[in-house]
Image (cartoon, rainbow, N blue to C red):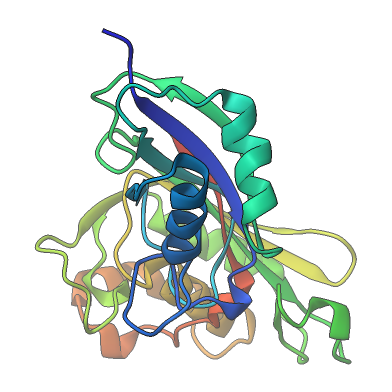
Length: 249
């Protein structure tokens, strides 16, 4: 039997969205995508993402699973070009592929890679106001880089999740946490892991920034992990600096 499942890879600017998930009276990525899917297929279709992104968070590689109408196989060209003709300008389908019927965008995922961008100059940059956390005092990147390595591996990340995080367990594995210069004036934090808690990456970044500012020692990360106390870790970094880059299967 021919598969009716498709996998879409989306990019979106999260600035004007209240996150991925449908919310009454709110503009969401899932909402505008499902409107476009219904217009293309002629019937309502449900879109399931690999993971929810919060309000203001961007994506270059969000993966979405869609079950297509029975008895009608839309060509890949229609799923890419057709949807892009129906979607608003701040969302685009980068590519599409047919997948086995058992594909589940969330449960089949083996990991995700996020990128957080910081603009660290003495003056603000208007062109980066929607994509970078702009920090004017100079940050020391080296202690941030060394501190980040203590987050790699399997740990209890209770101290780095939001107060309203619904996860039943807070143990997660991070395969890579890297802090490095990007273009002149830019600091990039790359985080790759198997799964994430709500606000986990942003709380990690907020803590690393405090280390870069000299407000806490670079060796503080093991203490924070052991404490399991969110109040001891750094602030939550702004959403607009975060981008979901890739989902691994």
